[in-house]
Image (cartoon, rainbow, N blue to C red; front, side, top):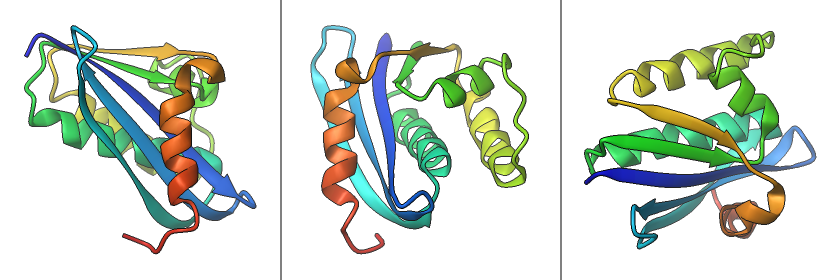
Length: 135
């Protein structure tokens, strides 16, 4: 597979509170390859965003893409993964470390910040799972 585009979103009701993730994976030609979401228990919104990223990176190994583009409306997550922002929170440092290790398993990963309007599907999936049972 040449390139994949992955839309990710994390949601938290209460921040921290009930949290969930949403992921949409598409091929070069915009073909939908996978849509998934799940409840992740109690977490902050930023933790949910990182868990969505980590889950997406694991899910995409199967496709063996030449390039992976991760799109998120979380400016914090995108800038931290681009090393433009420091990761100050201790828990997020751990999640960032895991995500960075997974990124190193790919040829190329590009992180793109998008407006919420362009991330509606991943957001919808996350919101659908926010009240769900953990896993």
